[in-house]
Image (cartoon, rainbow, N blue to C red; front, side):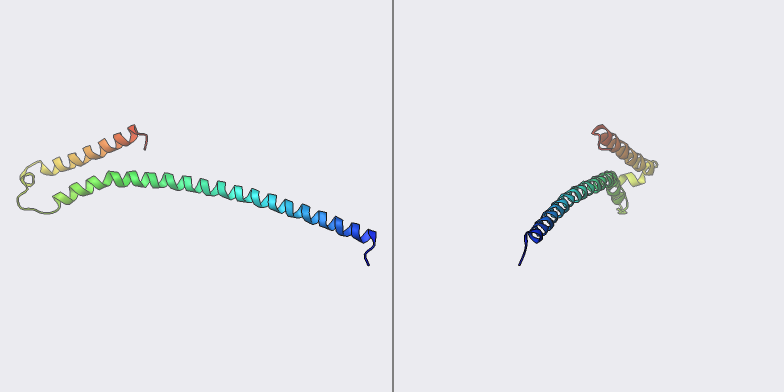
Length: 110
C-alpha cells in the first residue's frame, strides 16, 4: 500500500525525470544546430576549393588542346615549317591564359 509521502516522492521523481528529458531534448537540438553549422562551414570551404580547381582546369583545357594539335606530327601543317612557329604557338598559349585569367577576374570568379 502506498501512503501519501510515497506518492509525493514518486510525483517528485516524475517531475525531475520530465525536466531531465526536456533538458536532453534542448541539448540535442542545440548539438544538431551546431552540427548543421559545422557541416555548412565545411561545405563552403569545399566549394571554394572546387571553384579554384575548376578555374585551373578551365585555364589548362585550351592549352592541352593546342598542345595536342601540334603534337600530332601531321606532315602538312604549314606552321611547322615556319622559323618562328614554336614561339608563335607558345605566344598563343600565353595569350589564351592571360585572356582567361583577365576574364575570370573581371567576372570576380578569381
